[in-house]
Every structure is written in C-alpha cells, then in structure tokens.
Image 1 (spheres, rainbow, N blue to C red):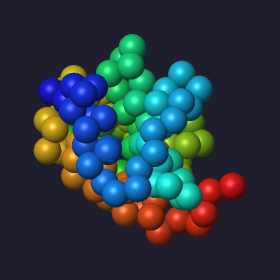
Image 2: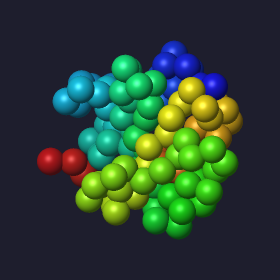
Image 3: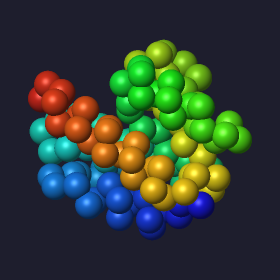
Image 4: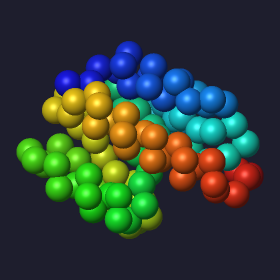
Length: 109
C-alpha cells in the first residue's frame, strides 16, 4: 500500500519538481517541463505518464490496480495506479520512468 504522504515524498525526491493544483488533483511536474504525475485524494490514486510499452508492462500487474486512464489521455500513456493496492517500490519505479520522460519533453507553455 502506498500512502499519500509516501507518494508525495517520492515525487519530491526528484530534482526540480513543482507541485501545483490541477483541477481536482495535485500535479507534479519538472520545472519548465510537463506534468509527470497527478494525485487524486478521495480515491488515493495517481495518474502517471508512461511510454506505451511501459504502460502495457505495468498494466500486467496482478489485481487490476494499474490500468490506462479511460479516455484519450490513456492512449497517450497516462496510467492510473490505485495506490492502496500497490507497493511503494512499484510506484517509485513508474515515477522514475515518468520523471525521465518529462525531463525529455519540450518546455511547457
């Protein structure tokens, strides 16, 4: 199980991360770059951006607690993690990949 506090600490463990409100979520982004993860408090879930290959691999996690966001964002690699059912080590692995992907992205508008 990954708690809110643990998730926030993981996100802030990367250099140059900003935390900002994002609709009904909290967003984490690399300064000057794109968002790499969001957190939704009421459901204790996170949306983490992955490459399509990485998304497919993570979605094979048993129990169905990791799945593509059910809209166009999911087709772009955004993946929901139900944190109550996922060990912190797996969440951190996904965040590492997402952070590196965001660092390589174009500058945000």
